[in-house]
Image (cartoon, rainbow, N blue to C red; front, side, top):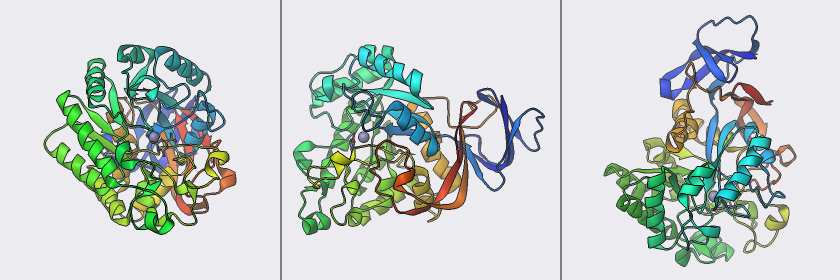
Length: 424
Ligand code: DOR
Ligand code: ZN
């Protein structure tokens, strides 16, 4: 089966391409890219006026399977991903049971092999049960197919355990993804510590609880002479600390999520639990710092932190509601609105954040559109406005803070390894 994508604006920053071109796909791969490609037997997609880019690589996704299939499954999550233009996800390990041993990872990989519509990579847990005490056997996690480790949802409090984790990750070539939160500081906080927490009478989470732990993790990774990836960066001081570490040559990368540049604590009105996430929505000053960090390259990647929860877990008092929101289906449109339309990033720069850089960080051979590359491609109508409606959400959970927003940038096709997995 071959597909010819004709006349789209092809954006492939890795190969320094931003031009109107055709792309010919044969089987799983791109076979040709250039002007006026002819292919008599190919199905033609007219991409005139559209953006053609590498599929999105979302390195922070909670698929919830096994254990919480009522929130999401590999099938429903990857269907939601494909609608959002995502062709690779890194599945976070806070499942039930956690991805802390060979058997559990094998179980998940079996489900992925059967049900995933796109590429699903597995992140193993750092500690047994994600309890922060006992280091998992990284050799076994690696052997079972994990490419990264994280205790996401929590941070490992013990310096010794975390240092050992970095050493072991280095030995087995695993990426360490750090959820940075000092629970002694964030405590029972539920939103950002500041004006809003006072006004609403809710307990606050300080910036300090995030950036202090980032400092520690960067320091431990340096001691183990290995790399570290900081998840969901949300505040100004974190950006500054990571900038400094990069400047002195430490092997640090980081991601932020669309809600940290599209929303602030001021969007938490009427105790809307869809705005409850961890780390929390921060101040406007922090939002500006996140945007600046994206622009100047301190923040390498944008990931959704897609965190599905049921209505039962969200439609309750703010204090008791779960942290997290879905994001796979809205991430690109929100990024276009906030970053492209507001001239924070150019299209090639956005593609670097959502595809090129995540591929590099994960060490996978994706994120580009050269001949011979995997045909993971999205076609986007960047000018098309549409309403984000609850009834149109594919994810099993509906906890999106963006419901009711009119956004711009509709994914028209998602192609994964040469196959159309989503079409609008
Ligand atoms: O808001 C969040 N939700 N932050 C996390 O770190 C975990 C996630 C989840 O798994 O629900
Ligand atoms: Zn997470």
